[in-house]
Image (cartoon, rainbow, N blue to C red; front, side, top):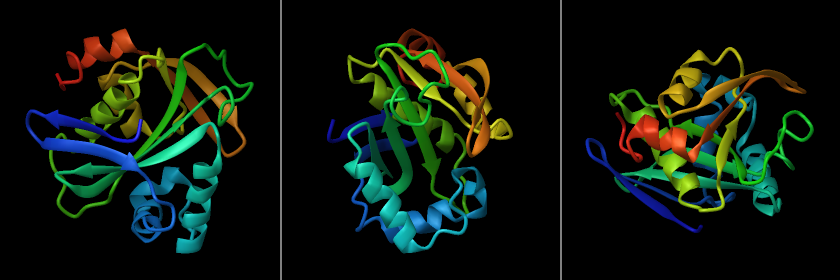
Length: 189
């Protein structure tokens, strides 16, 4: 997929486009080093390290990154990966059609009610737009209770904690059916 668009009934148009590691690095730097992005584990990164990380992801055959737009402006980041080959190798029972996901909303001084939920709904709809995707797998930090609540709101069920080299994570999965039931087809409940 090279692009994706979803219209949220309340918040308008959300879209994803492939990330350009070099052109988008300065923008992403401000996002991943912001205090609200502590779980992104890049607090001390400089712009070059951010560009390097996203060049590495772009070169990886099983991991890619997308810039999310809201009403045409950059507003979030989404990563898609094969959890059997990246992030979760040997840490869970992988199944055919599994897709791993990370997302990060840009920091803002003027929060919009329901925005983050609209973002995760958009990211999930994007992933499930690929008919090969049967289940989305996530591994947020066990301390990240805000994202656990968002995950539950779009249909994720908790598998349990797992130990990764960089964190204690809460492995959770969401099937297409769970997502559709939780969001009434990608429209937030």
